[in-house]
Image: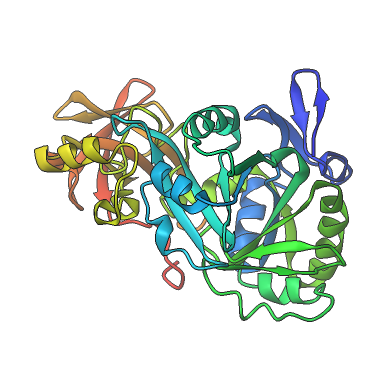
Length: 372
Protein backbone atom coordinates (compact mmCIF):
# COMPACT_ATOMS: atom_id res chain seq x y z
CA UNK A 1 0.00 0.00 0.00
CA UNK A 2 2.77 2.43 0.82
CA UNK A 3 6.31 3.35 -0.02
CA UNK A 4 8.76 5.51 1.94
CA UNK A 5 9.14 9.20 1.19
CA UNK A 6 11.93 10.15 3.54
CA UNK A 7 10.35 9.43 6.90
CA UNK A 8 6.81 9.56 5.52
CA UNK A 9 4.77 6.77 3.93
CA UNK A 10 2.59 7.11 0.85
CA UNK A 11 -0.61 5.29 0.03
CA UNK A 12 -1.02 3.66 -3.38
CA UNK A 13 -3.07 6.71 -4.41
CA UNK A 14 -0.23 9.21 -3.97
CA UNK A 15 0.34 9.72 -7.71
CA UNK A 16 -3.40 10.14 -8.27
CA UNK A 17 -3.50 12.92 -5.69
CA UNK A 18 -0.53 14.73 -7.18
CA UNK A 19 -2.04 14.50 -10.67
CA UNK A 20 -5.24 16.05 -9.31
CA UNK A 21 -3.31 18.99 -7.86
CA UNK A 22 -3.72 18.06 -4.20
CA UNK A 23 -1.80 19.89 -1.51
CA UNK A 24 0.07 17.14 0.34
CA UNK A 25 0.87 17.33 4.06
CA UNK A 26 2.27 15.00 6.73
CA UNK A 27 -0.46 13.19 8.69
CA UNK A 28 -0.13 10.18 11.01
CA UNK A 29 3.16 9.22 9.38
CA UNK A 30 1.80 9.52 5.83
CA UNK A 31 1.96 12.10 3.07
CA UNK A 32 -1.73 12.82 2.57
CA UNK A 33 -3.91 15.31 0.62
CA UNK A 34 -5.24 18.08 2.84
CA UNK A 35 -7.21 19.72 0.02
CA UNK A 36 -7.66 19.91 -3.75
CA UNK A 37 -9.89 22.81 -4.87
CA UNK A 38 -10.36 24.04 -1.30
CA UNK A 39 -11.78 22.84 2.01
CA UNK A 40 -15.11 24.68 1.82
CA UNK A 41 -15.72 23.61 -1.78
CA UNK A 42 -15.00 19.98 -0.89
CA UNK A 43 -17.07 20.13 2.29
CA UNK A 44 -20.08 21.49 0.40
CA UNK A 45 -19.69 18.83 -2.30
CA UNK A 46 -20.10 16.10 0.34
CA UNK A 47 -23.13 17.77 1.90
CA UNK A 48 -24.77 18.44 -1.47
CA UNK A 49 -23.61 15.66 -3.80
CA UNK A 50 -20.58 13.47 -3.07
CA UNK A 51 -16.91 13.46 -2.18
CA UNK A 52 -14.20 10.82 -2.49
CA UNK A 53 -11.54 10.44 0.21
CA UNK A 54 -8.36 8.37 0.40
CA UNK A 55 -8.30 6.79 3.86
CA UNK A 56 -5.87 4.02 3.01
CA UNK A 57 -3.66 5.17 5.88
CA UNK A 58 -6.08 3.55 8.33
CA UNK A 59 -5.09 0.21 9.83
CA UNK A 60 -6.80 -3.17 9.37
CA UNK A 61 -6.26 -6.20 11.60
CA UNK A 62 -7.88 -9.57 10.86
CA UNK A 63 -8.59 -12.28 13.44
CA UNK A 64 -9.62 -15.71 12.18
CA UNK A 65 -10.09 -19.09 13.77
CA UNK A 66 -11.53 -20.55 16.97
CA UNK A 67 -11.85 -17.88 19.62
CA UNK A 68 -11.62 -14.89 17.25
CA UNK A 69 -14.91 -13.47 18.46
CA UNK A 70 -14.03 -14.01 22.11
CA UNK A 71 -10.63 -12.37 21.53
CA UNK A 72 -12.20 -9.18 20.18
CA UNK A 73 -15.02 -9.25 22.74
CA UNK A 74 -12.45 -9.20 25.56
CA UNK A 75 -10.58 -6.27 23.99
CA UNK A 76 -13.50 -4.02 23.10
CA UNK A 77 -16.16 -2.25 25.19
CA UNK A 78 -19.05 -2.94 22.82
CA UNK A 79 -20.79 -6.30 22.48
CA UNK A 80 -18.89 -8.18 19.77
CA UNK A 81 -20.84 -11.36 20.62
CA UNK A 82 -24.00 -9.91 19.10
CA UNK A 83 -22.40 -9.29 15.68
CA UNK A 84 -23.99 -11.19 12.83
CA UNK A 85 -22.05 -11.84 9.63
CA UNK A 86 -21.74 -8.71 7.53
CA UNK A 87 -22.51 -6.40 10.45
CA UNK A 88 -20.26 -3.54 11.57
CA UNK A 89 -19.82 -2.31 15.14
CA UNK A 90 -18.33 0.94 16.45
CA UNK A 91 -16.48 0.53 19.73
CA UNK A 92 -13.74 1.72 22.04
CA UNK A 93 -10.72 -0.19 23.29
CA UNK A 94 -9.49 0.67 26.78
CA UNK A 95 -6.61 0.16 29.17
CA UNK A 96 -7.32 -1.54 32.50
CA UNK A 97 -7.79 1.88 34.15
CA UNK A 98 -10.38 2.92 31.54
CA UNK A 99 -8.30 5.20 29.33
CA UNK A 100 -9.07 4.93 25.60
CA UNK A 101 -6.41 3.07 23.59
CA UNK A 102 -8.37 3.75 20.39
CA UNK A 103 -11.84 4.02 18.90
CA UNK A 104 -12.47 1.70 15.98
CA UNK A 105 -14.92 -0.30 13.91
CA UNK A 106 -15.23 -4.09 13.98
CA UNK A 107 -16.50 -6.23 11.09
CA UNK A 108 -17.68 -9.81 11.27
CA UNK A 109 -16.63 -11.18 7.89
CA UNK A 110 -17.40 -14.87 8.47
CA UNK A 111 -18.27 -17.47 11.08
CA UNK A 112 -14.89 -17.16 12.78
CA UNK A 113 -13.40 -14.20 10.90
CA UNK A 114 -13.33 -10.59 12.08
CA UNK A 115 -11.63 -7.34 11.05
CA UNK A 116 -10.80 -4.36 13.25
CA UNK A 117 -10.20 -0.99 11.57
CA UNK A 118 -8.02 1.30 13.67
CA UNK A 119 -6.77 4.87 13.46
CA UNK A 120 -3.66 5.43 11.36
CA UNK A 121 -1.60 7.04 14.11
CA UNK A 122 -2.35 4.10 16.43
CA UNK A 123 -1.53 1.14 14.18
CA UNK A 124 1.71 0.17 15.91
CA UNK A 125 0.41 0.83 19.42
CA UNK A 126 -2.87 -1.03 18.81
CA UNK A 127 -1.10 -3.98 17.23
CA UNK A 128 1.21 -4.35 20.23
CA UNK A 129 -1.63 -3.98 22.72
CA UNK A 130 -3.95 -6.43 20.99
CA UNK A 131 -1.21 -8.96 20.27
CA UNK A 132 -0.22 -8.96 23.94
CA UNK A 133 -3.70 -10.27 24.79
CA UNK A 134 -3.81 -12.98 22.14
CA UNK A 135 -4.30 -16.44 23.58
CA UNK A 136 -4.33 -19.78 21.78
CA UNK A 137 -2.23 -20.95 18.87
CA UNK A 138 -5.25 -21.61 16.63
CA UNK A 139 -6.08 -17.90 16.34
CA UNK A 140 -4.61 -16.28 13.22
CA UNK A 141 -4.19 -12.57 13.98
CA UNK A 142 -2.81 -10.57 11.04
CA UNK A 143 -1.97 -6.95 10.35
CA UNK A 144 -3.18 -6.44 6.76
CA UNK A 145 -2.87 -2.63 6.77
CA UNK A 146 -0.07 -2.60 4.21
CA UNK A 147 -1.99 -4.62 1.64
CA UNK A 148 -5.33 -2.86 2.02
CA UNK A 149 -6.60 0.20 0.17
CA UNK A 150 -9.55 2.15 1.59
CA UNK A 151 -11.66 4.78 -0.14
CA UNK A 152 -14.56 6.67 1.41
CA UNK A 153 -17.33 7.74 -0.98
CA UNK A 154 -19.59 10.07 0.99
CA UNK A 155 -22.63 12.19 0.24
CA UNK A 156 -26.28 11.92 -0.85
CA UNK A 157 -25.38 10.80 -4.40
CA UNK A 158 -22.89 8.13 -3.27
CA UNK A 159 -25.14 5.16 -3.97
CA UNK A 160 -26.01 6.47 -7.43
CA UNK A 161 -22.31 6.91 -8.28
CA UNK A 162 -21.15 3.59 -6.87
CA UNK A 163 -24.00 1.73 -8.58
CA UNK A 164 -22.77 3.06 -11.92
CA UNK A 165 -19.50 1.15 -11.64
CA UNK A 166 -20.82 -2.07 -10.06
CA UNK A 167 -20.12 -5.12 -12.23
CA UNK A 168 -21.47 -8.62 -11.87
CA UNK A 169 -24.69 -7.60 -10.16
CA UNK A 170 -25.31 -7.06 -6.48
CA UNK A 171 -27.47 -4.11 -5.56
CA UNK A 172 -26.30 -1.62 -2.96
CA UNK A 173 -29.73 -1.24 -1.37
CA UNK A 174 -29.20 -4.51 0.45
CA UNK A 175 -26.21 -2.99 2.23
CA UNK A 176 -27.88 -1.04 5.00
CA UNK A 177 -26.33 1.31 7.56
CA UNK A 178 -23.47 -0.36 9.44
CA UNK A 179 -23.47 -3.50 7.33
CA UNK A 180 -21.01 -4.64 4.68
CA UNK A 181 -20.86 -7.09 1.77
CA UNK A 182 -18.60 -8.03 -1.14
CA UNK A 183 -19.25 -6.32 -4.46
CA UNK A 184 -17.29 -5.77 -7.69
CA UNK A 185 -17.18 -2.08 -8.57
CA UNK A 186 -14.93 -1.32 -11.54
CA UNK A 187 -14.02 -5.00 -11.74
CA UNK A 188 -12.31 -4.93 -8.33
CA UNK A 189 -13.13 -7.21 -5.42
CA UNK A 190 -14.31 -4.79 -2.74
CA UNK A 191 -15.77 -5.02 0.73
CA UNK A 192 -18.46 -2.35 0.53
CA UNK A 193 -19.38 -0.95 3.94
CA UNK A 194 -22.20 1.52 4.48
CA UNK A 195 -20.30 3.56 7.03
CA UNK A 196 -18.48 6.89 7.17
CA UNK A 197 -17.18 9.83 9.16
CA UNK A 198 -19.15 12.71 7.62
CA UNK A 199 -22.77 12.42 8.76
CA UNK A 200 -23.90 11.72 5.19
CA UNK A 201 -24.96 8.51 3.50
CA UNK A 202 -22.00 6.82 1.93
CA UNK A 203 -19.62 3.90 1.72
CA UNK A 204 -16.18 2.84 2.81
CA UNK A 205 -14.57 0.61 0.18
CA UNK A 206 -11.89 -1.92 1.19
CA UNK A 207 -9.85 -3.33 -1.67
CA UNK A 208 -6.38 -4.58 -2.51
CA UNK A 209 -3.98 -1.63 -2.30
CA UNK A 210 -2.99 -2.12 -5.94
CA UNK A 211 -6.62 -1.79 -7.07
CA UNK A 212 -7.22 1.52 -5.29
CA UNK A 213 -5.99 3.86 -8.07
CA UNK A 214 -8.14 2.14 -10.72
CA UNK A 215 -11.19 2.18 -8.42
CA UNK A 216 -10.61 5.87 -7.61
CA UNK A 217 -10.41 6.86 -11.28
CA UNK A 218 -13.51 4.87 -12.22
CA UNK A 219 -15.52 6.43 -9.41
CA UNK A 220 -14.37 9.94 -10.31
CA UNK A 221 -15.34 9.34 -13.95
CA UNK A 222 -18.75 7.99 -12.97
CA UNK A 223 -19.37 10.90 -10.63
CA UNK A 224 -18.08 13.70 -12.86
CA UNK A 225 -21.57 14.71 -13.96
CA UNK A 226 -23.05 14.15 -10.52
CA UNK A 227 -21.02 16.66 -8.52
CA UNK A 228 -18.42 14.24 -7.15
CA UNK A 229 -15.18 15.88 -6.04
CA UNK A 230 -11.94 14.54 -4.57
CA UNK A 231 -11.68 15.56 -0.93
CA UNK A 232 -8.81 15.90 1.51
CA UNK A 233 -8.23 15.81 5.23
CA UNK A 234 -9.39 19.40 5.69
CA UNK A 235 -12.95 18.71 4.58
CA UNK A 236 -12.94 15.40 6.44
CA UNK A 237 -12.22 17.33 9.63
CA UNK A 238 -14.86 20.04 9.17
CA UNK A 239 -17.47 17.42 8.26
CA UNK A 240 -16.79 15.23 11.29
CA UNK A 241 -16.61 18.26 13.62
CA UNK A 242 -20.10 19.36 12.52
CA UNK A 243 -21.29 15.91 13.62
CA UNK A 244 -19.24 15.93 16.88
CA UNK A 245 -17.55 12.72 15.81
CA UNK A 246 -14.54 12.18 18.04
CA UNK A 247 -11.04 12.41 16.58
CA UNK A 248 -8.45 10.31 18.39
CA UNK A 249 -5.55 12.45 19.55
CA UNK A 250 -7.79 15.52 19.78
CA UNK A 251 -11.07 14.70 21.52
CA UNK A 252 -10.15 11.33 22.99
CA UNK A 253 -6.94 9.61 24.05
CA UNK A 254 -5.58 7.52 26.90
CA UNK A 255 -6.20 10.34 29.40
CA UNK A 256 -9.93 10.25 28.64
CA UNK A 257 -12.54 7.53 29.14
CA UNK A 258 -15.61 6.60 27.08
CA UNK A 259 -18.10 7.76 29.72
CA UNK A 260 -16.91 11.37 29.88
CA UNK A 261 -16.24 11.61 26.15
CA UNK A 262 -19.79 10.82 25.09
CA UNK A 263 -19.05 7.24 24.08
CA UNK A 264 -20.89 5.61 26.96
CA UNK A 265 -23.32 4.14 24.44
CA UNK A 266 -20.59 1.80 23.15
CA UNK A 267 -19.81 0.49 26.66
CA UNK A 268 -21.93 -2.62 27.28
CA UNK A 269 -21.43 -3.53 30.94
CA UNK A 270 -24.00 -6.34 30.79
CA UNK A 271 -22.41 -8.09 27.81
CA UNK A 272 -19.62 -9.67 29.84
CA UNK A 273 -16.08 -8.85 30.83
CA UNK A 274 -13.79 -6.60 28.80
CA UNK A 275 -10.54 -4.84 29.60
CA UNK A 276 -11.30 -1.69 31.59
CA UNK A 277 -14.79 -2.79 32.67
CA UNK A 278 -14.14 -2.64 36.44
CA UNK A 279 -12.55 0.81 36.21
CA UNK A 280 -15.39 2.18 34.09
CA UNK A 281 -18.01 0.75 36.44
CA UNK A 282 -16.26 2.46 39.35
CA UNK A 283 -16.22 5.75 37.44
CA UNK A 284 -19.91 5.43 36.67
CA UNK A 285 -20.72 4.83 40.33
CA UNK A 286 -18.52 7.69 41.53
CA UNK A 287 -19.91 10.12 38.97
CA UNK A 288 -18.10 12.08 36.29
CA UNK A 289 -16.30 15.34 36.97
CA UNK A 290 -16.23 16.54 33.36
CA UNK A 291 -17.90 15.92 30.03
CA UNK A 292 -17.10 16.43 26.36
CA UNK A 293 -19.61 18.92 24.93
CA UNK A 294 -20.28 20.87 21.78
CA UNK A 295 -20.45 24.65 21.90
CA UNK A 296 -20.87 27.56 19.54
CA UNK A 297 -19.22 30.92 19.82
CA UNK A 298 -21.33 33.90 20.87
CA UNK A 299 -18.49 36.39 20.44
CA UNK A 300 -16.28 36.56 17.38
CA UNK A 301 -13.41 34.12 17.16
CA UNK A 302 -12.70 30.54 16.12
CA UNK A 303 -11.89 28.06 18.91
CA UNK A 304 -8.84 25.92 18.24
CA UNK A 305 -7.47 22.70 19.70
CA UNK A 306 -5.77 23.33 23.03
CA UNK A 307 -7.40 26.68 23.81
CA UNK A 308 -8.43 27.05 27.49
CA UNK A 309 -12.13 27.01 28.32
CA UNK A 310 -12.88 29.49 31.09
CA UNK A 311 -15.48 29.04 33.81
CA UNK A 312 -16.17 32.24 35.76
CA UNK A 313 -12.97 33.66 34.32
CA UNK A 314 -10.77 30.77 35.40
CA UNK A 315 -9.44 27.79 33.39
CA UNK A 316 -11.94 24.95 33.72
CA UNK A 317 -11.54 22.91 30.56
CA UNK A 318 -9.94 22.73 27.14
CA UNK A 319 -11.00 22.93 23.51
CA UNK A 320 -10.30 19.66 21.73
CA UNK A 321 -11.60 20.57 18.24
CA UNK A 322 -12.91 23.73 16.63
CA UNK A 323 -13.66 25.26 13.25
CA UNK A 324 -15.79 27.70 11.33
CA UNK A 325 -18.64 25.46 10.20
CA UNK A 326 -19.08 25.72 6.41
CA UNK A 327 -22.63 24.34 6.64
CA UNK A 328 -23.82 26.60 9.45
CA UNK A 329 -21.69 29.71 9.05
CA UNK A 330 -20.89 29.62 12.77
CA UNK A 331 -17.75 29.05 14.78
CA UNK A 332 -18.18 25.77 16.66
CA UNK A 333 -16.08 23.74 19.04
CA UNK A 334 -15.81 20.59 21.09
CA UNK A 335 -14.24 20.47 24.52
CA UNK A 336 -14.22 19.17 28.06
CA UNK A 337 -16.05 21.21 30.68
CA UNK A 338 -17.01 20.58 34.31
CA UNK A 339 -20.27 18.66 34.77
CA UNK A 340 -21.75 21.82 36.27
CA UNK A 341 -21.44 23.55 32.88
CA UNK A 342 -22.18 20.61 30.57
CA UNK A 343 -25.91 21.17 30.07
CA UNK A 344 -27.31 22.70 26.89
CA UNK A 345 -27.41 26.48 27.25
CA UNK A 346 -24.58 26.70 29.78
CA UNK A 347 -22.41 29.78 29.33
CA UNK A 348 -18.66 29.39 29.03
CA UNK A 349 -15.78 31.40 27.63
CA UNK A 350 -12.90 30.43 25.39
CA UNK A 351 -9.48 32.02 25.63
CA UNK A 352 -8.70 32.99 22.05
CA UNK A 353 -5.32 34.66 21.69
CA UNK A 354 -5.40 35.90 25.26
CA UNK A 355 -8.95 37.28 25.17
CA UNK A 356 -12.00 35.70 26.81
CA UNK A 357 -14.69 35.11 24.19
CA UNK A 358 -18.24 34.14 25.13
CA UNK A 359 -19.66 30.79 24.01
CA UNK A 360 -22.56 28.52 24.94
CA UNK A 361 -23.03 24.77 25.14
CA UNK A 362 -25.41 23.51 22.43
CA UNK A 363 -27.10 20.29 21.41
CA UNK A 364 -25.11 18.09 19.07
CA UNK A 365 -24.65 17.11 16.35
CA UNK A 366 -24.25 20.72 15.29
CA UNK A 367 -25.41 19.90 11.77
CA UNK A 368 -28.67 18.09 11.05
CA UNK A 369 -29.79 17.29 7.54
CA UNK A 370 -32.64 19.54 6.47
CA UNK A 371 -31.99 22.13 9.18
CA UNK A 372 -29.14 23.98 7.48
